[in-house]
Length: 159
Image 1 (cartoon, rainbow, N blue to C red):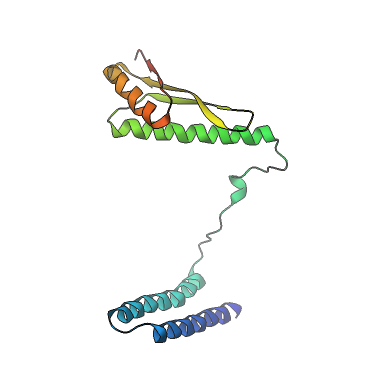
Image 2 (image 1 turned 45 degrees about the horizontal axis):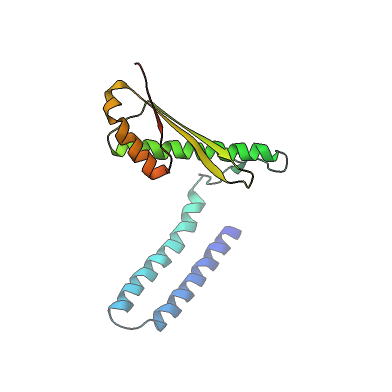
């Protein structure tokens, strides 16, 4: 019964708000456009609660699975997590930069270090390529160096 009451209350509030806005709106094409938008808003405000009544899908997200309890974990655990995630993001970015130039790296590793003032800097970028891309080593250095402000070390694998 509470669901029906809350749905009715939402519909009434939306109707009143739409009516007030419609009366205050200037005439002409703007009023027609505004009435269309208000009508869509009103329709959605009535349909969404009804969908919720018949839907069994839960949209709850379990943050505990992805979060770390900072109170229980040490500061170094948190710093390690930040460094790892940052390195992973930089690897993805470097891979995307190379792929945009049709260069496929076998492996990319990014080394990060933390300074005393808690700044993070790139200590090294290591890009493993096979012999097919050996002639593109300078281009790889240029692309990664200009975008990440650190010239990578290119390692050519024997495979």
